[in-house]
Length: 314
Ligand code: XIL
Image (cartoon, rainbow, N blue to C red; front, side, top):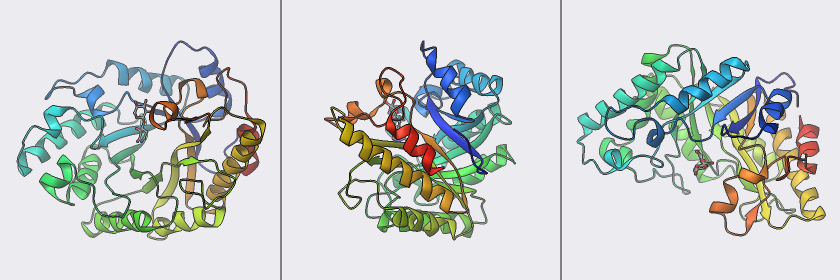
């Protein structure tokens, strides 16, 4: 898989005993995102007790294989230990907790992380802010504060806001645009917005949850890119109702093609990451009942029609 003038084609990675995975990464990707290893629950399970052995393996793997590392993620409501979410910290203390975490992670992986997902999933579907310990305690300024803290400890890494369902160019997309403006209004840098692209691969792009048509995908990118930031797809998987059939795989291939094309059609789209390699380990069946088969390789590591579809798009 080539990158056609864009900066990267990536995959979310969980390092596991599957020899095909390093081969595929080597052949098809130049970027990786640790699927879970850099999340708060993995890296600071109790206060100021940093457990970074696993995250270190990903950093080493990226370095050794000359891969860009998309570091994921610092400030999020999920996979956040209870000592943070239910710690009852006041505003000032919680900002201190945030800074301590950011300082440790960002400093340790300085020079290895190409991008950081600084804040993940701060929005509700209607574009308002999601309730979380961050928002409820600090207010919307938790977002610019987080971005300024990452910049404080790494002058170079690219700073991203990341969320799902931004692909429809609706209220939630407008919320992401508002976040870009908010960060900038504080005089703080943001390099880009990550569109997760966890979407359904329906034949009808207007079906609920479906990957929309290419024009809508492009318009959704422009909503934030026109504010002067880059855009990327960070977690692409295009699920279907299982079991997969030849027809559904064809529909999926077309969906992958239009998603890829939408990135190539937008100048500020810098790259794309798929959320895993093989359907064997995708998170989708565990979360979306009756759905799966969302990735480019099947459970036996054979390339699916989606692989060719995606390739056609780039
Ligand atoms: C998922 C992982 O794939 C799973 O292994 C884990 O159990 C839960 O999280 N949005 C994100 C990702 O930003 O971190 C999530 O990853 C998928 C949704």
